[in-house]
Amino acid sequence: MLRLYHFAAGWPLGLLHGLGALLGWLTWLASPTYRRRFAENAARAGYRFAQVRAAVAHAGRMALETPRLWFGPPVPVQWQGTEVVDAAYAARKGIVFLTPHMGCFEITAQGLAARYAAQHGPITVLYRPARQQALAEVVETARRREGLETAPTTLSGVRQMIKALRASRAVGLLPDQVPPEGMGQWAPFFGVPAYTMTLAARLLLQTGATPLLVWGERLPRARGFRLHFRPLSAPLPADLDAAVVHINTEMERLIRECPQQYLWGYGRYKQPRPQA
Image: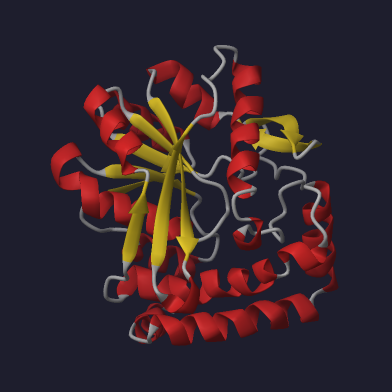
């Protein structure tokens, strides 16, 4: 599998995006379960399929651009809102970057590491180890790069992130990822209860770090990506339950900026799996 990823990494981004769009639609056509979940999740947020149909192709683009991002030459990256990032690093309280399953979240960590790690230390990103051994080896190899550290979704990974924040460094995670049973709570997401991780809120409340929203927009015609940074719309509540709800609300706000690039097919409302 590693050889396959390296082979695809040399392809032009435009070709990967074109094939990815085709893959996205083929997957949508072949899977009634995927089609139903996609439509139901979008409807919960108030969108008709016609309004978010572009997200079908973007899901495929996300899949096929990954080898290029992991093993290929750099891709063009534009920046919007970096003044909030600069201010957060200057405050030296640590930063928690929060991004939903939207656009290209792989490029957010890579871009931040390339721009800020030399001066402010590496960024630590939370990841869920792949269950397939071959894929796990690919992911581990791909994300082992200068300025970027990874923390697994385990107790040791949480400790690693707390240590990074207390050293005034940055961490990143996807708070709309469904955590294992016992590691989250039910909270509204687009008005419907969804099992939501408490880790993001706990990290912020425990360390006093600065929360920042970020998402990587996939630009048309394979021109690269644009990273968008936002502060929270309101201060994070001191109560854990309220903080979790607030983070979900912030994710909703970010998704509504570009619903055409959100992964509506992701099982956001599924039951959590038992903790290993």
